[in-house]
Image (cartoon, rainbow, N blue to C red; front, side, top):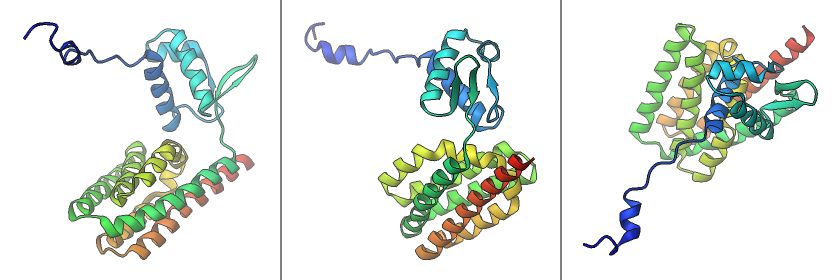
Length: 231
């Protein structure tokens, strides 16, 4: 075959993967620090300190902070700099309320469509979550919680629900992190009952349990935030 017979195919086979722009990597790194609570709401974000901590120059940090502002994770105050966004009770209430609607329907559909393998996957995640709770590993508890809820949504089989849930997943994780410890064993007992309902294909019970579960988390977050404001 000559070099010119099928040039597009030949070139396509040799395409080089494009590296992820540094600003995107820095964006993800800072965002993860915000979600996990290492950078707390209201905390001042100093470009030089972030650049040194992440091992990069200040330019990608500056660009990442602009993106984080656009996505409402960071507030930029002229003359003062960048600060981690402090969500208002209204913001949290609205997002967690939408989460309840999405996840109750996800649980209902998961109960109708989940396979034995899907239920087994939920039980494995549950075991990891309980083990993390006993070890007082809050980061692992939050990760297991997020994975469990995402898996239930996947098991629903509804692509629109999956897409919508993915759009709010990170912010849900952000709101869940500060209450994961106080929710503690109760949350994982609720998970256990929910998994049982899904395994039994009891759609109505699964939806009710998920609705109650997510509402408990919403109320805990809002109550805890109110107590913090009073202090």
